[in-house]
Amino acid sequence: MRAVWKGAVTFGLVNVPVKLYSATEDHDVSLHQVHDADGGRIRYQRVCEIDGEVVPYQHIDKAYDDGERTVIITDEDLKSLPVERSREIEVVEFVPTEQVDPIRFDKSYYLEPDSASNKAYVLLREALESTERTAIVRMSLRQKTRLAALRVYEDVLMVQTLLWNDEVREAKFPSLEERVRISDKELELSKQLIESLSSDFDPDEFVDEYQQELRTLIQAKLEQGDAIDTAATFGEQPEKEEGGEVIDLMEALRQSIAAKRGGGEKPAARSGSKAAAKPAASKPATSKPASKSGSKASASSDGAAKPAARRTTKKKAG
Image 1 (tube, rainbow, N blue to C red):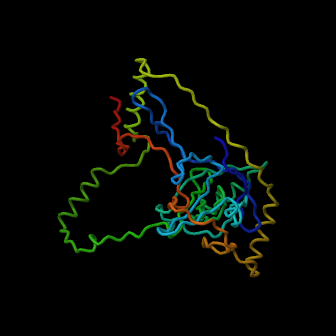
Image 2 (cartoon, rainbow, N blue to C red):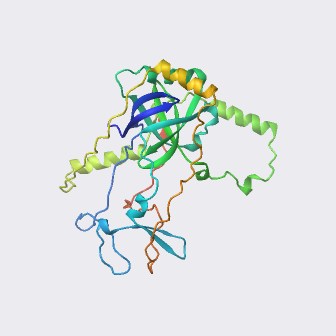
Image 3 (tube, one colour):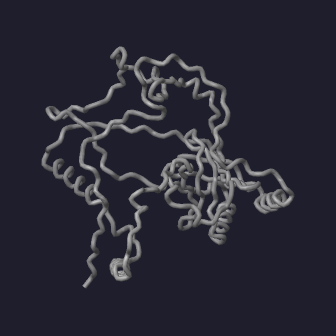
């Protein structure tokens, strides 16, 4: 695996240098679009709606459209905003693990020790396990400030980025407000059905049958010679800068506790409030509404949607 970020977990004066790795990966077969007549690759071009010209990427700005007016945001405007580039995973607080609802989890990353000694790393891991706590942390990843949960997975520390509170929709449906009468017999039969299907969860028992069949289809076409010659290249990701060193662990712990008891500096605000930025000069709105901020046109492949994974039945040895 290649590290996607290097920095340090910090709580109080304790500094734990770490490397960050993506904990998950996508194994879906990648498909693209071609011309059915000759197999030619279908590619997308960035065409201006006003003059019909193909626009080079370096001449493309972003824009926000409120339905009536369009505000163009240039690269210079974005650079004027206070972007976080910190190399720290700052612990804001430690909370009971059960209070972090899984609906808030976004992406998962493994943390690996990045120093000559992993004592501070192991100490943090064991402290979290013994107290059954999860650390709520703030970090900067891909130039965005993110809230995350730092917890223990098997023997590894991991962070899972969290959705901000306003990104979780309210679970409220009028159809559930109607009172429904459930009889004791119906409830008892439902419990019996659940009990008959009860088991310990084993992820290895579930496979994506659609992807398996798609790979079988592709292999069959290759063996039958039903293919054309193609070439593809992949770029390398640049290495990130190195993390810091661990300071004296026991002394850092003592000083951190002393600072708390003595009314030391309070943690920074926990919310994802936006820092004030000077107004960015905008270009005149174009006559055609541009796409909303943050959205990007992407090529999608035609094909059936993936069905839900099915559970396969293991054959027991006779």
